[in-house]
Image (tube, rainbow, N blue to C red; front, side, top):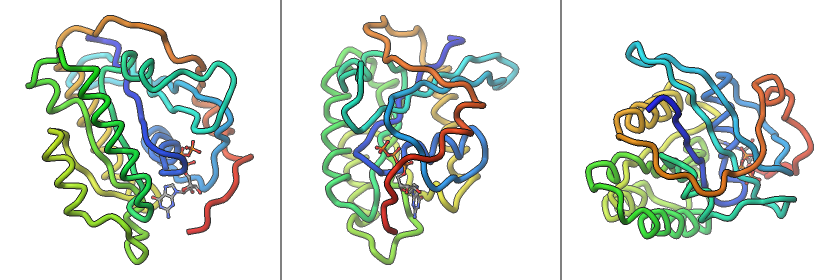
Length: 205
Ligand SMILES: Nc1nc2c(ncn2[C@@H]2O[C@H](COP(=O)(O)OP(=O)(O)OP(=O)(O)O)[C@@H](O)[C@H]2O)c(=O)[nH]1
């Protein structure tokens, strides 16, 4: 498979854009515009293979032409489901998303299912105000057969890159692309991505 489609899903403000931007640009930028959903594209070379990566960043707020979570799940080959370790409600949301992915992807071979969903507890730098224990994340990951990461988009560059690279690698090994349904709308170039940093309320940390 040369086209890799990843969806980064999770509750509002958990750091989905921050993780994507960290991976694509190495930078952590405090604020991102979030008024539209978008797909970031990147050309990658892994193990001598040329890959076209599409990373889907949903819009948490109501926005025009917004795709449903079900559309997003049908579109993607691999999933990074994010919660904020300092926000328990985001963990509950992540749990619901992981369960929905499992429900909608029942036909996917177990071998693939285990490797194509990652559960990520973000904002590890906020462990002094932690609401979700690491063990709870590990338990959910074990129960739902996903791989677990706890990291910080703000402080960890290498870990973020490793996590996304592992997912790209897993998807690239994962056989045929699934049949596409509705394609989530929106597309952004890297230049736009770098400019896409203002216009969002600040969450106090
Ligand atoms: N302390 C800390 N803050 C973070 C981290 N990652 C993201 N943030 C902050 O969390 C807030 C939300 O980050 P975003 O990347 O916009 O989160 P999002 O999930 O894309 O948000 P929506 O698109 O609105 O759902 C911003 O203020 C970021 O600066 C992190 O690892 N640590």
